[in-house]
Image (cartoon, rainbow over all chains, first blue to last red; front, top):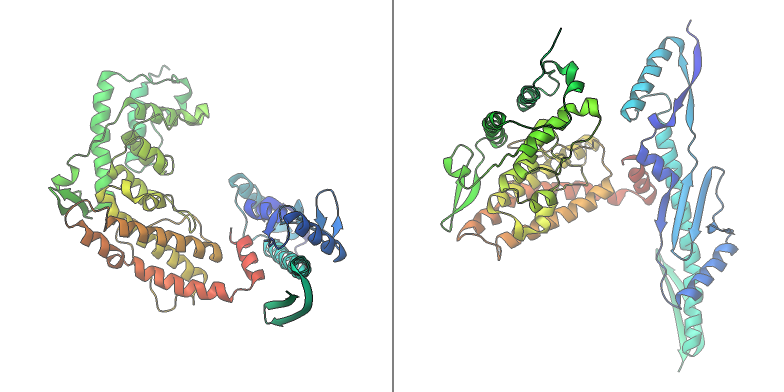
Length: 185
Length: 310
C-alpha cells in the first residue's frame, strides 16, 4: 500500500502573478457628491465610518474584517484598498510514487513561470478569489450604507443654509432613496 | 584539429534555416559560436548574397501570407484590386534591406553565448520585417515605430496579420483611431482583420460559455487566423473593450467612406466591407450573448471573474 507524504508546493505555481498582485492590492473607488464643500463632506464621512466600526489608523480607516483580510479606506481619495494574505506555499499530501513526478512538474512550472492547473491545491486560486470577491462586496456595501447617511445629513445641512426647514420626509422605492425637504420662503 | 569559422557563412545558414521555418535547426559549427567576433562587418560579396537571399525569401513570405487575397489600390483615381500574384501589386513597394538587418540577426545568432539583447530598433522597416520573420515574433516592432520609420503598407499588413492579440488588447487598433494616415490597401484589410478578431473572440466565448452564442457559428478566417494569446477571458472587461473597439472601427469606416476617400469609387468597397466580412454579424452575436451573461452576473461574480480570468 502506498504512503502519502506532505509536500510543499510554492504559491507561484498555484496562483498567477496577476492574481497574486490583485489579491495583495485590490482597489475600489467611490464617488462623493459635492453637496457641501469637499472638506466638510469628508469630515462627515469619516465621522460616520468611525461610528460604523471603522478604526482610524495612520494608513486610513480600517474596516473590521476577518483575520488575514484587510480593507483600508482613504476618505481623501475615496479609495478602498483590499488585500488578502496569501500563504508562501501550500502543503498537500501526495502518494510516494507520485512525489518525484510532482516535484519535476513544480520545477518545470517555476522555470517556465507558469501555473499548474491540475496540481493539488490548484483550487486555492478560486478559493482566494472567492474570498476577495466577498470582501469587496462587503466593503462596497459598508461604504455605500455610510454614504447614504452622509448624503442625508449633508442635504439637511445644505437645506438649513438655504432657509428654515419646515418639513423633511424620506421614502425608498427599490434601489432609489428619496429625501424631500420643504423650506419656508 | 583546426576549424575554420566564417561568420558570414554561419549567419547565412542561420538566416536561411529561419526563413524556411526551421527555428530549432542547428547550424554547422554552432558549438564554436563563442569564438566569433562580437561585431559583424559584412564584405561586399556577402552584401550581394544577402540581398538576393533575403529579397526572394521576404517576397515568398508575403505571397504565402496573403495568397491570392486582393488589396485595393488607387490607379489613376479608380479603385482596382490586386493580389501578390499580380505585377501591379508590387509597384511602388520597395524593400530596402540594409547591413543593419544582418547585424541584428548576427547579434541574435550570438545571443545564446553573449546573453545580450540585439539592438532591434536600429534597423530599417524592411530589416524589421526580416528580423520579425526570422525571430517568429511580430511584436518586436510597434506600429508607432513602423509609422515613424515610414514603413510601407505591406510591412504593416504583415505585422497586422502575424501579431498576436488578446481579447482585450489589439495593437493595430491604432489604425482605426487615426484613420487619416491609413493607406488605401490597408483599409479594407483592417476591416477584414477586425472581423477575424471578433470571430476568434466568439470562438473563445463559445468554448468558455457553450450556451452563450447558441445558434451562431463564428465566421471561419479566410487567411491566417488571428491568434489570441489568452485562453481565458474576463467577460466584463472584454465586453467593454470590444464595444470600444467596434466603435473605433465604425468611426474609421465612416471616415474612409466619407471625407477620407482616396479614389472616385473606393467608398463603395469600404462602406460594404463590415457587412461583407461579417464584422457586423460577429459583433451582434457577441453582444447578444455576452451582454446577457454579464447582466445576469451579480457584483460578486463580476469581481470573481475579473480576478480569476486575468
